[in-house]
Amino acid sequence: MTEPTVRAVDRSDLLTAETSEGAQELQRRELTPTSELGREVGAVLRLDGRVLDARSIDVDRRDDETMIINMGPSHPSTHGVLRLMLELDGEFVLRTKPVIGYLHTGMEKTGEELSYIQGATNVTRMDYLSPIINELSYSMAVEKLLGIELPERAVWIRMMMSELNRMSSHLVWMATNGMDLGSTSMMIYGLRERELILAFFEKTTGLRMNLNYVRPGGVAADLPDGWQDDVMVICDTIEERTYEYDELLTGQPIFRNRMIGVAPLMAEEALALGVTGPLLRSTGVAWDLRRTMPYLAYDQVDFDVIVGTYGDNFDRYAIRLNEIRESARIVRQCVEKMPAGDYRSQDPKVTPPPRARIGESMEALIHHFKLFTEGFRVPAGEVYSAVESPRGELGCYLVADGTAKPWRVHVRAPSFVNLQAVPLLMRGGSVSDAITVISTVDPVLGEVDR
Amino acid sequence: MIDLPVGAPEGVVVADAVGADVACFPTREQYFALVSAFKDGGYELCSDVCAVDYLGHEDRPLPEGVAATRFEVVVNLLRLTKRSRVRIRVQAGDEPQVASLFSLYPGVEAMEREAFDLFGVIFTDHPDLTRILMPEDWEGHPLRKDYGVGRVPVQFKEAPGPR
Image 1 (cartoon, one colour):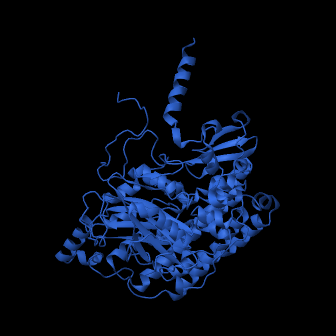
Image 2 (cartoon, rainbow over the protein chains, first blue to last red):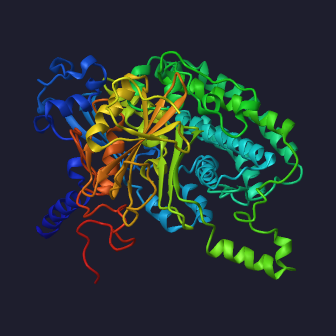
């Protein structure tokens, strides 16, 4: 009768071995050198001259006073497969270490095997909440190497779609943040509003997510008939609803208590950690690539860069809520100013012939076939193109060697870098604050792990 | 084009770059001092660190005076006040090893770990140079060009063999 017990023990040893990440995990204090301990509690950031003060990291604390527990990889509030190892003293978090890589699928390696046209389908799957912006960063990198100019209309379509995408991404954030804080109605409202945008994406591109819409040389298709009305309805509805969110959350006492003053971040810390996006802006640094290093036609539209003061959870919330309104404002201007013309470059090197020509012209058929089997060649060189994604600076470092496939595709993922702020933000807070920290840092794990 | 900051080591090769104001090509010895000078010169944000494996491309076009090696470490720095970007491309050697920038920009911690994990670049004085994306017991560095795609069929540790 003892057999099952033995098996269970065997199984648990195996399970430990199978799931262990060894050196990547958070170690006990007695095994952690002081310098490492200082890094893990973020003490190196708070010091001038980078001399570690042992008192600031309470080295005297013994291991039997604290407990190391796992949060994740599958925990509803980790937004994917983020695993956080927390060292707890009762209810309070002392050290945190994110263990990532559970969603790593080698997309940068895959990118080297795909032609430049196929590359957009690859990068669009990284940050799955803002596919258009991923494609945009990649396509702009390819276009810079090719040295092609885009027609005005393509630029404005890209800009409008990016802003719609930013709205939908922030709406998902509002929804999940609401859910993390216990407001399930916010979750349903956020996803309901996002549905409007996804429906428009489906109408335009044929897909709801992973759109492959922005491609090197322009966009895949022109906007559908009557798009102005659709877009205006989206803007009107969502803008009106943001005021409902104000009523539901912004003034709500429980929500405010959990957000205001929780997990503050200083501007110096944010810059040292390379943090960008709403996290950086919440600390009062007005850095938005759309304004500071304009790409597309962002220098021709009016919008405000929303900046916080304290860098706490509430500032991050308020920035995202207001960015939805600013995006709506940009989209309205796009509708107003949308130029006529081509939606993609007419350079035959990168653009396939129109579908109708393929039926009547042998050359067009060959051209189309060659472009989609062999792809186009990009002159050797390397380029870094950065755009402002809903989470921060999304960069694409592309190395071309003159063939039809990139030699190296590196994506500078904002979530990957921003995640480093989590241990700093969590320190000293309670476990329930830890949930709000993950939520307001807003990592997308597809992008973190790539 | 921008001038190199005060305190930059002598003889750093500078060239034009696409997507940045300027590209600098320090040697491995000059690398840390150059980044340090840029940091003191107001480049407060290190936006990206990555590695590139140029296997078989040792004859690639590089400015005069830069000896190509197989691996390159590419750093992108950002200066918020002047809105400028610089790119630093250091030839990291065939057995790649460069100094860690952790003491200047703590935010490179994860990015350098990623370059180590995927390319095997050793960053000396990095506080915790462990794998970050791949499992701890993974063999090899998958983004190297001599590392085949799809060579490892099973992705779980100690998985039982086929039955």
